[in-house]
Image 1 (cartoon, rainbow, N blue to C red):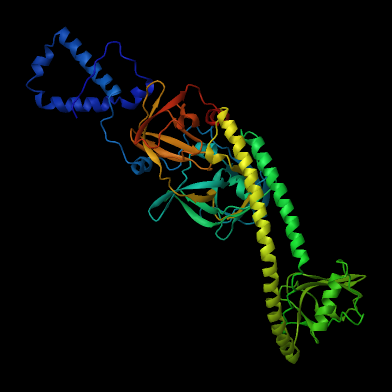
Image 2: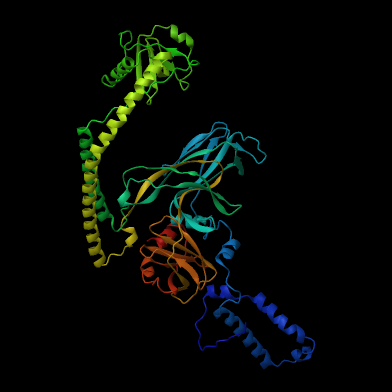
Length: 588
């Protein structure tokens, strides 16, 4: 490429970042030597007799070449996004190691294991004999567990962990419901988890849910980060559940209005539940007949008669258990009680004891917990009512007829309920729609009065959850769901208020509606996909560890219909000392 010098009178001085980005004195010297190699011999005597004026001119030319390198675009062609990130460290914290989510430490006896409760409410259960050295030898004595949690986009950013996931040639992003990193040390040296051992994790975090489906638990999966193959690997389904009732962020500008809306929803749903209960009570539900089971000849049995008064049944359910047992024995003559394979171990000599009373309660639709009671002892067994021979055949024939009658009665019952339930659901939906219409009207008034908020966030709330999974190894573990690539986008260049362009940097993008972070390769034509209806935040870390940021209100000025756009970032001229400084800059 030819040299195009652009000399200006009193030019604007380049920033230190521009100079560092463009100057390459080694390459300049190499090019100069290459150009002069062919002429070195025949011009040697002329170089020795250069005049003072010629030397000054040469110096000026050299300075011009350097300055030309500062203000012109880089000679080397831009990399692809894949090439750029492939050259980067896979886990690359953008700031100093002191400005990262910090590890906590707890010590366990390797031979006994232990339980650790994190300040957030999370819980780790470490099994006994779970650690080994690099040769597979079991570790004895005390082991230090290093553990940290990452919950939001600032944590993910500071940890430097990518959240991309490739599947069938399509690159998705992972929306997180909480991430951890865990490892163990013995005397300062890393140890490994014994194969077959795992650490039970109960990770308390938050997820973003729609106010339309507050009680619908979203589906997340568990992934482990493979730093060798540079990818997240699916491990299991996240056993996630909601905890606590506090679901709103008091810092949300719409907090008061969302709270009012949810209160109205609560009143509507509470009334609907009462009406539904009244509807179901008005039409008695058919009772499913008891299915008989054949006795297993290999299992021990007991003969218990609940009708002749020989057994004193301790009934804690106001006679319900006694009535159920009497009904069972009346329906199926010859019923005996078989000890279940899941019953605790027992001494057969116990059957020679004269037990004075029994306590019995149903465990499921087949088994009962039977406790035999004596003043000096008691025995608890799991038993099932069974029949033998002709008693079973007769009972089965009777059951099949009763079950056909039950199915017909249930269908009739459901048909009667269906019409009333549908009418109730229609009333509930209408009442919720009216409450939502009132909410939307209030938001329109707020927007007209200058309050800024994204359309996509006005119906979203946060709910606290607990994620349960088993960590089968050390490293990063993440509770995630996949986010499909966005279709709407522009080609963006990045410039700050001082005129500095940002090239060959990593840009970071977040969307308030999703708990994730996107990494972009900053060039003059960066493909930038974003949700125009949401609040978006973008930033770049400069070479001198400062942050240039594009805030949501600036994103709103971007026209998605325009193909290319130069985004005007604001360089925050402040030294970053800790996580609080980062959160203050990136708050939105």
